[in-house]
Length: 74
Image (cartoon, rainbow, N blue to C red; front, side, top):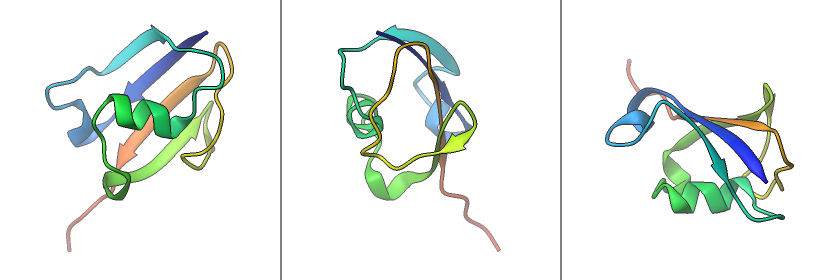
């Protein structure tokens, strides 16, 4: 299945801004995080087609996954 993955802020460092990639059926958001070497505590928000989802959410063909890191500052 084809999934478009969009990375934001520091997640783009040494990676990509957006890429359409093939993944096996039943791939979860967590599987993609693992493949991108993004640790769970680094994740601020994961959105599928603009809606917040947990890492265990199973993706479907044609969806867009947007990944945002936690925001720090003061």
